[in-house]
Length: 382
Image (tube, rainbow, N blue to C red; front, side, top):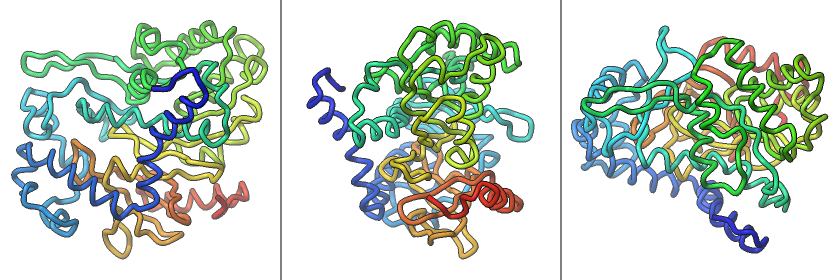
């Protein structure tokens, strides 16, 4: 996508980022376009046809026809898709499955991946690409990405006569995003997958040692993955090799996700361990990559050009971009696979177009969030 010449790199970056920036500038138009595109796909599935997707013309029609649904609501359909009834939810054949690290009532969630879905997951690279575009730090591409992600292949699902791999979404992101960005990831996702899908301390120490051995003599300019894993890796280096990441590498930027408070609660620890890095938050889940930090302001900006975003608030259901500053809402996202999916993340709006996920949708989450913000002197600060 991006050549060695700086002008080509600049043009490539801007082409990659332009749809995002245009959608953020006009979210009303972008969301209408996304809904039309999603409905075309839904109409080709049994679930979509049952709810009249082909006849829907407006957002109000969509809300009347499709109910807000949780994973538990979709679970039976997903299980049938896993058994081979693809057309129930999908208008394409699945090419793999993503699983959650957490659990839903003791079980990992399984989310099917399609070619369209994977094409959207490459946009996880927007935070890093926008950093390079706005700072001019093209030397980042001359280094490597320290890959601390979970395995992308853990096991296999039998779908009728087909057998498909399943793995963790963070590893899947890297495996596919890295092929579309001009920076290589080490260890490779294949090397991480070869160590197996275990989650014990010993499993993670094996992955950390692999990362250290592959990257200790490399020019690491980027660190991506789960924020807590990045901290645990630094602590492992100190225990096992008596060094910190900042003693080994001059990291420019860390693109991290999976936990609230990356830019507030975790940032001091990250900079103490990795040096004066730029921290950029990525907001996503197993179901998709929903937004990423665009600039120095410590909040993410939605991918209005990829997903359809609603929120359930005290005043009722509304579009994400309609939230007032300081308002809280439970995210309802429509993906190419799941219409009006309530993900159980609680979103706080700042001035447009900035948002934060402050945690799971529980009554005590705002209390914990505001206490953490107050303790770190970050209340309402971007």
